[in-house]
Length: 297
Image 1 (cartoon, rainbow, N blue to C red):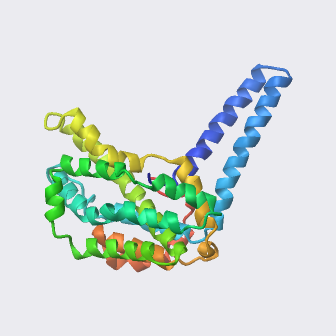
Image 2: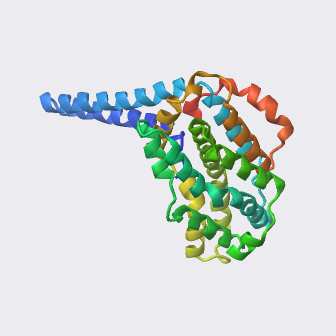
Image 3: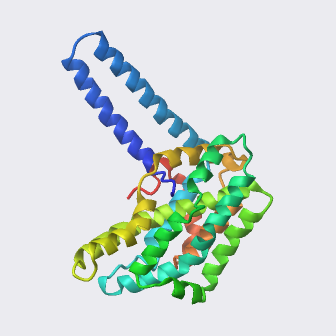
C-alpha cells in the first residue's frame, strides 16, 4: 500500500470535527465525567497532530519532492489532456510503461526490509506493510492491465521503452546496494509517486467508466480499478510510519532532495512523459511547499 501524506490533512480535519463535537457535548452535559472525557480525547488528538507536524518539519527536503510529484501527475501525457476517445489507449500505454517497475517491486522491497537495521522499528513495520510476498498487489495491477486490454502474455512479450527500463534499473540499483538508507529513499519515493499519480488518475477513470456502463460490467471495473483505488486511498498508518522512517535518516535535515529521491523522481517523470524541460525550474521553486499540503488538489 502506498503511504499517503494527504492523510496528515485528513487527521487535522478530523481533529477539528471531534473537537467541535466534544465542545457541544460538554456544553449539553454538565458534570465531571463529560469534562474528563473531553479533556482526555482532546489531549490525545492534539498529541497525534503534534507528532505528524513535528516529524514532517524534520524532513526538510520533503516539500521539494511532494511539489515535484504533484506537478508531474498534473502534466503527464497519460492523464492530460484526458479525452474519452483515447482514454483506453493512454491507460494501455501507461500499464506497459509501469510494468517493468511494478514487476520487480516485491523483490526490491524484500531486499530493503532485510537491509534495514532491526532497531528502526518504524522502517521495519513500513516495509513489512509494503511487502508483497504473495504478489497480491501485483495481481491487482495485472487485473488493471486486463481491464485496459493487456493480457499477461502481452506484458511478458512487450519490449519496454528506454524510460521504463531506466526507472527499473535506478530503483533496482539502490535496493540491491549496500546502502540501506539510499534503498529506503528509492522505494519511498516510488511509492509516494504512485500515490500522487493515482490520486489524479482515479478521478478521471472513475468518471470515464461511469460513462461507459454499457461496455464494461460492474465486476470488471471493480476488479480492474482496485489497484488505482488502493493507492489513491488515504493510508494513515503508513503515512505515520513513512514520516518516522524518513525523519530518522541522515538526509532528513538537508534542504536539497537526496540523490536517490531526485534520480527516482526524475526517472518516473520520464516514464510519465512529463515536459522534462520544466524539471529544473520546478525543483528550484518547490521549497515554499508544505508536507501538510502534499497531494491535496
